Image (cartoon, rainbow, N blue to C red):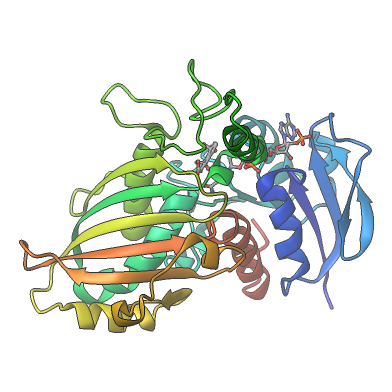
Length: 351
Ligand code: NAP
Ligand code: 3JN
């Protein structure tokens, strides 16, 4: 059987450690594994399939002989190193925003637009976690009823901002409960001037602000959704807007999604029916049993959970949904490994 050499770039991070675990559980025949991170981690070890693997510093030459790169070490690292990996013959699945809006780079969620994989020229972009879970839920509705408008408000977990943000949130929680002052150095976003505690708080800022008052996370959700559903990041046929909020939850993002559909015959029951058959989706929607998706129960799972499906009371063609998924799995590591599984199964590892 053909086997593949796989490199994980950013192996020590919140996403990287999940990439190791998802790759261990995948159908990909891994012949050799390379764990790459910064010089700070070089020489340390992490386990893969029960064996200790020595972490190497990520350099261009580290990609010699690599077939598949799973990259999650930040946009600047991807911009610098992925073209080097492609030159050496690897296919790269990139979890950063570095190449997402490049029209020559497919932006892929396998349940939604797998046909785009065939167009790759060495790099495939993994969308933002908030976009992924929303488009998984929207896809069967879009196909069956058409979509005019999407208005989403996110409830994003601390782990979306990386391992150090998650550690800061836990420390703040301990300090608050011990009656001590909380110290914030990372959130809402490491690159901005001011920092605020997340524990016992809500932060309506994810990533930096654009001049129009939207945050960059909101901008990503709008344009990535259009690129994935309509293959055009500026498509005008579908109106999308977003408000992104960081919430004091460790893992799994929640989203309240308002949709207006084209088909006037759509009902909540018909929407529930297409959602229950949707790929990668689990419908959890029974108010009589208080059944709905929650971050605690979605954590550690690969699926996207959807519930609270109901008709808008003012607009007859509009509906509301509540969507929850593990941001580190379907929002990042599992979507990447799922792409890699499809590349292997469909023999698309050449470029
Ligand atoms: P994290 O926990 O902070 O981990 C960062 C990883 O990158 C670590 O392995 C780190 O290695 C490595 N790294 C940092 N600088 C490096 C360098 N110069 N060369 C090589 N490796 C370097 O962050 P994370 O949450 O895992 O996220 C990583 C990236 O994934 C983010 O920056 C973002 O671009 C992307 N991301 C995407 C989504 C999504 O929505 N799909 C969600 C989260 C993150 P050391 O331990 O050696 O420092
Ligand atoms: O904050 C979240 O919940 C998701 C964060 C995603 C993220 C964080 C830092 C840099 C990204 C991303 O994937 O959009 C990036 C980036 O690569 O731009």
